[in-house]
Image (cartoon, rainbow, N blue to C red):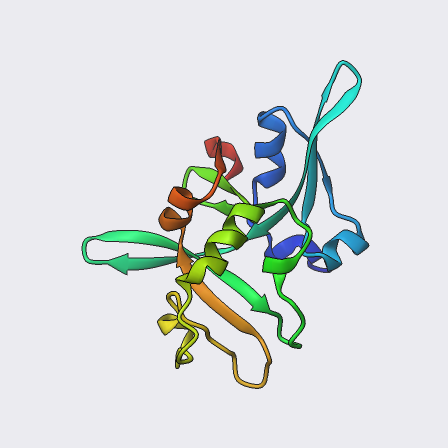
Length: 168
């Protein structure tokens, strides 16, 4: 069988949304072009409330001294040079951590990123050196950088959706 288009998304998000009282559907093709992976909402007395467009993003584990730290990627420009997901229409970014999904307000996250946390003065030579610095893969026009999830938590409105052991 053919691999799913959604195979790059960390498992367990749909189940976590349902567990937290949200309805969930996979994004339409048009929504996916806006870097939206899921749309979630609650229904209360027949009324739709708390609608959110979610972009689920991958994380990177980096070893720091004696503990591991979780980092994420920021996409300023995609591989074709178009505006990256930082400028898309999603309302929340979801990052899978060991025991939870971390949902960051995309508006807060974008304001934090645009406040000057990224060093634009010199390109990172490798993806490993892209901590708060711009990196471009060879042959692409992309502009991406890494950020530490714990820093974003301190600066952005966020929610934590615990994952039960069966969904990991």
